Amino acid sequence: MLRAANALGFDLIGEPRLVRLNPNVPTKTRGNAALVARFGHGRGTPTAVGSLPNGPARSYPSARDLTEPERLELADRLWTTVQSTSAGSDPGTDPALLVLRRKPPSELYWEAVRRIVTMDEVQRWLVGTDPIVRSTPSGVGQIGAAAALAWPGGHPTWEAIAYRDPMRWGTARNVDRGSVDVTVRRHPELFLCLDPRTRRLLITPHTACPILFGVRATEPAAAIAAVQEIRSEPIERWLLFRTNQGTGDHVRQPWPVPAVPFTAGTVSGRLAERPVARRGGHVFFPLQLDSGPRVRCAVFEPTKTLPRVVGSLLPGDRVRLWGGSQEDSVFRIEGVDLLSLRPRFIARENPRCPGCGHRMGSLGVGRGFRCSRCRHRAPPEIRRLRRVPPEFPLGRYHPTPSARRHLAPRGPEPGLLSSQMG
Image 1 (cartoon, one colour):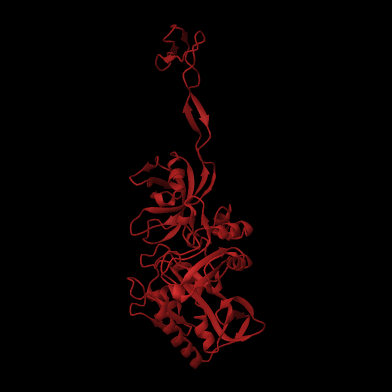
Image 2: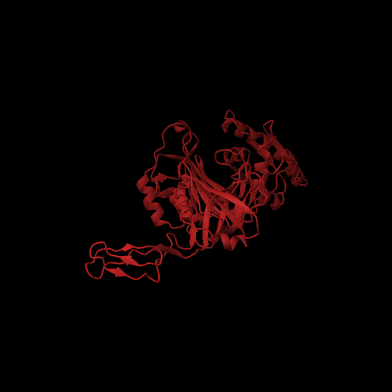
């Protein structure tokens, strides 16, 4: 899109944006994201935000707005580009393009990232934005496009995305794993690049798309440096995006009870019963919410780390969970905060015989012990239980990196979710 706009003589203004949308929406695409960019006639000193085949990709700090004929020309050119590059034959692919003079209210973003938003709602939020709309007949893509335009852009992360030579699309990607390891160690601001548990490389997609790799970071300079340092097949172009990835935006408020399908949020309470492991490694349990009702919760095996954490809990343990729902009322867990745990005890071993050292046998509750070898008797012990530490201490537990959602709160930074959710 940047090349198409530049070809018309229009400049990129500010940072392009990559905005992830509600991960619980049943009609989501694989990446479940929208791209946002502002175009105009640039003013001021531009900065480089990427590289194109014909030179640096530049962004201007301010601009003179486009005229109405220029806006229409831009919409038509960009829509042609979208149609020629999108996987329109894939089921559920409903691309859309919105060209607005003014941003929609940020409320649209916050609602859309947490629940199902209807087309009627979007139309009301777009009043006063002077929209030019291009979309497939279903129009569904307009919802995500409008929500992305409404993102206020606060507490961002960044992703530098490197694109492949079109001649290589559909072939195996060549990205050197060793150079990724070195780059991640060199730049601690990078996140979700590798999964040490599964040994998966997380920066490369697994589809026949134009992207070679994408490097996520909490600071833009680290993402830019990583593109230069990772060894790979030739990069045709790259661009730095401001993103909402790793922010936990979808879980910044309580999950609605009674359950509303396809919504996200947090729940807090105490375990009402012991967790039960089901076939396939999934774990289920009821949570007694602080607000009163009970909610059935589930954690699934692909998260790898979470079934074991949840399976270690006892009735009465207090937790805060973040996640969301599908079409039913089950709360699907994306992460766990262990807030308080009941004391854990295990039975002490029977005492040894003071005469021969053999382990004595119990004569029954309150009746003491007797040695089967020398028949020596011992009185009952006052304490038969020994306190032990919990398997998992208090704190935050995330899925294995390859199972985390794009929007999931970053780990292992403690306090991110609680400090930002208020």
